[in-house]
Image (cartoon, rainbow, N blue to C red; front, side, top):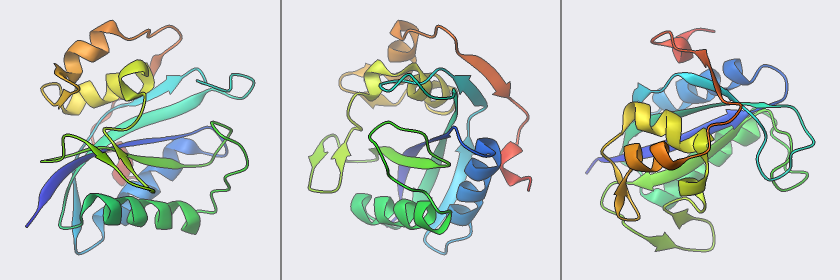
Length: 169
């Protein structure tokens, strides 16, 4: 049985746009997961730990046969393959892939995964690109488009809005 899931991607070291594209292509090449839509890329100020370079962020919708935790594991494997190092919370990174929401799972809390993703309703860098591909998705009682309207978008700009940007090497 396949389910839809929504992912957040970002990075601020090296070439984050290329890294996000590589990660999405790696997911799309799996037999159990297909990338069905990808938002534009946004250039966003850092959040949480602000003394670091700005980020590039995007969101993607996938269709997958994997359960929520197995999907997260696949994403973490891709991060590892791409040499992501977890040195400090909210610190600089070459790639970050988060499972934001999963069809049919209103709420989940396990050792490895919390759904919906914690604090996503406070983060414009998640809400704005997610609203591009899933405006009617309901998170914590509101549509993503409504959450995005409430978000502080200060300093956020569109970096790439060409369709299929993630398919390019």
